[in-house]
Length: 138
Image (cartoon, rainbow, N blue to C red; front, top):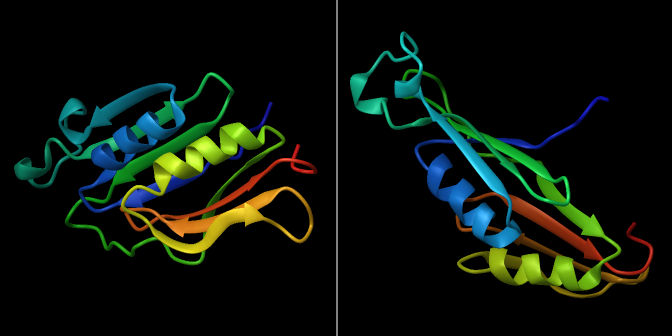
């Protein structure tokens, strides 16, 4: 089986973001720091930065992230959105409500012209999200 998973890069916020996503989406969060992997650091002050984090929900969603160390160029996520969609409108709406905390809403979650519900936001960590729930969103 092949999987396609969102993998988000941060500059020092990966742990906080992934813990926030875990609160919003549920699931098991595994975090490995650069300090956990001998020889991976160029700056000892970055030991606690996230080398790899993976959130896996009971429903099978997988979201991954890491921090970009200081010696590497970092560009904030741009031009890509994490999309959460499904036929269970209540589940999608609940995730919207949690992820909207501290977010900038670009389109309120509500009826979509094509059916179901739709909304867009940029979360408190600068990550763009799209939500599509209800009829026709299996």
